[in-house]
Length: 134
Image (cartoon, rainbow, N blue to C red; front, side, top):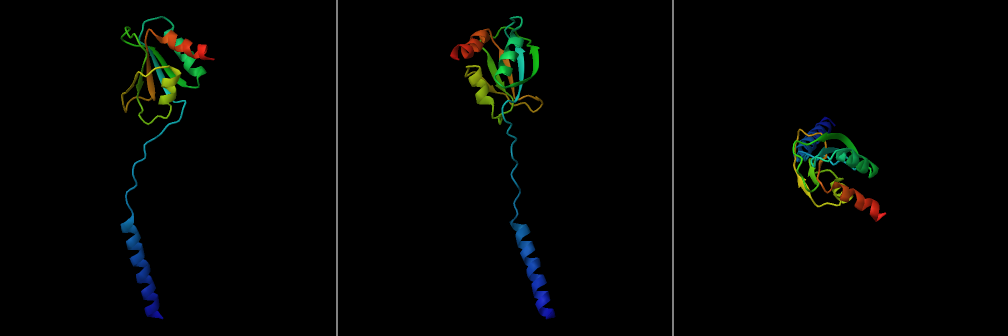
């Protein structure tokens, strides 16, 4: 009986060692954020009130605009989306809402937003397209 108990203890020990040897490091899972996401808007066209109009439009489309400011440059002809979080699920929806293919991935670990919208002089046409489609 004592040999039987020792055998079972040794068996459990070996099984435990085998299982611990089989464990592999778990891969790091990238964070995938869902729409609406955090959006920063920068007025890059110099048209007064452009950022507020873009904020109102994007909020009506379900996006969370968390920052609004003037850009240092005011000469953008076209609106550009800088994608700060490459894993953000709302990137395609944002591009669709703005009727643009001007999406540039700019990964920046210090940015606390998913995307920055640099407003170009075309912003009113982009916003109107959506209201004309309805």
